[in-house]
Amino acid sequence: MARTIAEKIGRDKSAVRVLVRELFDDEIEVRKSAADVAKRITETDGTLLEPYADELAGLLETLPVEESRTRWHLGLVVPRVACTCAQRLRAARTMSLLAEDESNVVRCSAVEGMGLLALREPSLRDEAEEMVERYLRDGTVAMKSRARGVQRTWARAEQKK
Image 1: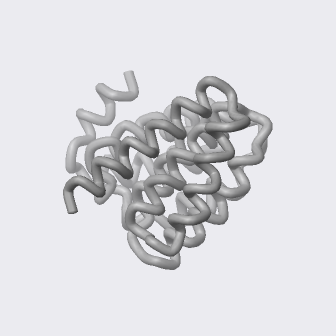
Image 2 (image 1 turned 135 degrees about the vertical axis):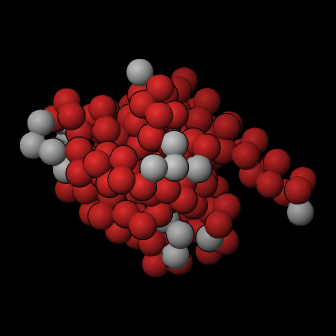
């Protein structure tokens, strides 16, 4: 369903504004669904949500632990839409915190998000590599899978250079 909604939103800026408003809704389920749609949108084009990068980072930083699904989705959205150095560094700090989260899915999004950030912010590469190595060594099956995915993404990026 989230994928279908993301496709319907397309490049409609007013629909994106409504989606962002829903991310701040009082209802947990509304926030969770909106975060899922935002994640789907950023899988193909993060530029639609880039104008909201600071707001989304702030939201992710303040979401309670109980909202692990929303935090998981936003843990991927925030790194994808961070377009300035300051936004990427802020997102990296958040990913470091999420890497210690009690929720496995949130920890998985942290390593993937950090990997994405390191692609666009070379100063984060050492920290990202350290996180990947730790996940490969000590992580759950899902965390190891995400860490290997980050390594593959980095390898593809290196081949394109």
